[in-house]
Length: 151
Length: 155
Image (cartoon, rainbow over all chains, first blue to last red; front, side, top):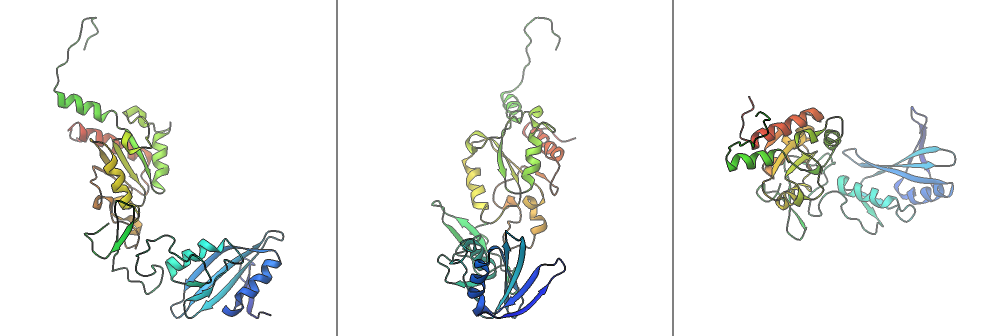
């Protein structure tokens, strides 16, 4: 049985619960059996750890719950076995926040080219090191730090 | 010229005739990348009709168009594609940079993913500032480009 660390409501009346990372799959399976579906998935950089916030929605009772899970080592269990909709959401979080979802079949970058260095929405990402993208005649993209090799 | 029924003759140079023809049949390419594309569509619609100035219809193929209106934020992944589409357009070809994102980065001036001005990629003839520019402003940009093609000064 999973353990809910905290359970309260925000100003809009939405239920917010906090879970431990090891309980996530079990809790989400339980919520799915109650009729909840994953609608949105956020990542937050709290500087000393990363937060992932899952928004689940019950279409029968019109009930939203936000589930907040913290991670210290940039790894999270993947929810793609439960909800197929988590596929691209987790790829987006891997692309921009650098959260690695264990168990994801196809964890590639979603927006940026594959050769991009770093994850841009992290607080420690250096915006001074500008990266430039170019494309060869076959349509393959290449990334470099040199301004002459791309735009 | 009086309508007298006789054959009227007007002398000009071949360059002037070509410039007149080119400036009054600018066919734009639909290069809508972000929110500026809405204003570009409004310019083409019947409220602010660019058909009055000869820019008759938007073409979807770069081979049939001779004006590229880059409307919207130019991302770093989009910039090589813009360059490739620009190279597929036949000569003579002209470029209008629409909106501050395309001119110098705009609100994304320190962003990681936006090209700071499309003139780093392709040559630009007319800049139309605004966020977004109104359809009237873009129409004025097209009239300015027509004057540039006809080698007229703006005042």
